[in-house]
Length: 244
Image (cartoon, rainbow, N blue to C red; front, side, top):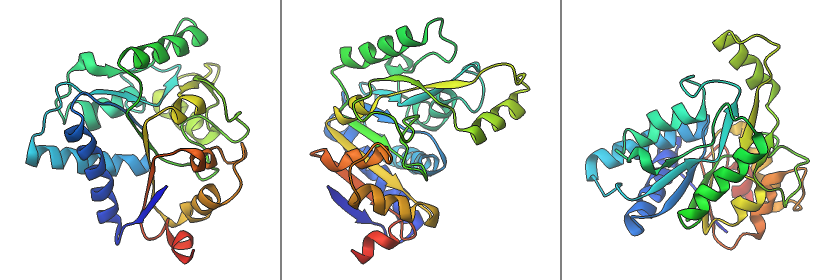
């Protein structure tokens, strides 16, 4: 595991974005998994700026989102499909045929999980997986208590996110929102992983995930067992790690 603490938050975004850019340049037909959230939004903006400057080939890469909200249309601005479309696919001019995502309103959740996995497998499996980390140690919708060998599965919606989506969309409370998430097993099959965190609120969980026991109480702790992980932190998130 390689741990890098950037000298500033801006440098954090740049370093993480450069790592993704280098993956694309080094392997132009790479299969790359992206995460969504406050941390990765800044990384993706920096990546788009790098691409504008250097215009490296993105015509052959395959990209996908590691999770998706279910129960809302893809056109909803808070869907992972829409966020990655606006943040990564369109800015980097990635062909839509190379953008893989689970459906937001699948007829059968388990069948959609299997279909999503198969679509990635047909492209050769995951070369590079971008990850964020939740304050409770979750990655994607793999919440604490998720078995560490879990395959891609329907995930539980965080209550705060659930409330926000209902309020923003006007969807009745009777409509159940959920998610589909890449499983911990599938994440661990990625050839390379980049875990990113910024902000003081992530300092405790990053220390626990990287140096505590490997446990389903902190799903991200499983990354200690992966052979190729880059951890990129800003000074606030890396405060406790730096003391080690």
